[in-house]
Length: 519
Image (cartoon, rainbow, N blue to C red):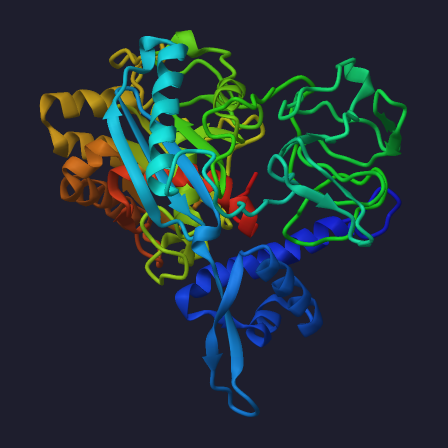
């Protein structure tokens, strides 16, 4: 990691180190892990680990979990993650059903909802259903209606503090300000100073959000109407005040070099993601945000839908921004198959972190094939979800395997999805599994993956038939090739039909632990 002047990017490095420690606390579970073990497993010095864990304890993310006998000397204090210190909502929008979950930092489902949905009913109707489910889950799972008193959520990398939170200088001396309005992608100071004179915006009323991505250049004056100002070094998804004060970042990091970018990923274009202070979840305690998963194709970075197969009315719709305005919390949008694969990769979606049976323990590559009302794939290489150069990877169902075959909803003919769903409609599950297995064999031969996982409502209705049928095709392929490693294993994905919703929640949680991002 190199800065603009060739030096080490200390901000990124420290964020990475904190994520390493958090992830080890997460995988250690209730038994906890000692500081010495954290140092040994991360390669950090004991002093660095002590500083990081002290910050995490101060933020309420970590706590002591007792003492453990050591081979020599006094017993070691062990630390554990505090799962209830943060929560995320995950929503799976299927073509005919909405499933939503509220999970804690450990990925455990705290509350869930399931209801019928017509994805073709129009954006306003769908957004209203999402808002209703999210508010009900927050009320049930967080112990009261949004806005009730409760602990502050942990702030992910680059995320700014909650409204009204103290933003204090690490140098002490009482320097600081109240953050009338902040979000994870930008900040207005409480005194009325604004973070982008070029936007030409007047200072917002208390609590108002400003457009995501309206970042200013390094060193640009950030001035209030009264003439006060400060020098700034900020990024579109987080903020450091020019005088060095910091926005309650859990890592407790030193301010970056002027103009240094925060290592959070690509920021949206200026003007995107205007967030509403009146959103129904804006003040929900401990809530990090909402992850939404639905059929693709879509632009994961911008949160904009492309032509969702069978629903052309969604083409170009800015789902992320629309939900952020309505709900008042950060929103991440991804394809259903990618979300499910992410949950599996980080040990969520039915396999707790640190569980030897969790898919994340495989450590290699896998393909998650999702057969429900459609057919798609989530691809994981080296522990990270592969989205492709334009975030469009995984359109598995629309590979053509029969020229001049039956028409598909995508406009082509002979797609695997069309053939597979037609066999399901006829009640011929053996044929549906054979078609699915053919596609899986093509994928295994092309990408040399370690594992195939099957999921989705249609698979869940007849798991043995699909696992057996797909496995038979892959075994036949292995016999033809005469390889010594045997066929690619085929397994049923854990978590069943709520795996996509749980994975959607991981869209918010995984970055906190430095997990799940790929190409």
